[in-house]
Amino acid sequence: MPIPASQPLPPSSDNAAEGAGGTVTDSLVEANQRYAASFTDPGMDARPVRRVAVVSCMDARIDLHAALGLKLGDCHTIRNAGGVVTDDIIRSLTISQRALGTRSVVLIHHTTCGLLGLTEDFRHDLAAEVGQRPTWAVEAFKDLDEDVRQSMQRVRTSPFLPHTDDVRGFVFDVTTGLLREIDPQD
Image (cartoon, rainbow, N blue to C red):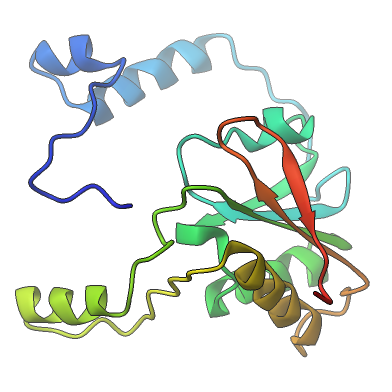
């Protein structure tokens, strides 16, 4: 479930930097300075070596590269709330396939997702609060497996995507780190 705005977030490991008068963004910029000090151009272009695009939830508990054994340059990683296939995901996949050579699509949802149980009331409450209705759908779901199937179907039927033969969907278990493949036909 999502954390209500009134509930404090758990402490982060960057609290020391934040408490010293800086913000979390300041600590990220400082980390980038340290990273850049020893950075060398890996000599890659934007085409993923493994010709795969991975669509996943933005959840901070999922380290996609580590979970899938990927290295820098192996894949395109496209993330959003829930890992659902929206028009913007189709846009990114279209560019990934048509301009940058990917051929496979891996879709990953996960257990205890914040979109589980959320409803379109979220949009209505937001509209009441800010005085403007969002143009986007929440894309919440009650059944992880069914939403993965829906996302696979959206990819497979998009007229913009020329490579839809290798589209597979999974649920990542945030407590075990294991992927469970979803049969598109169930």
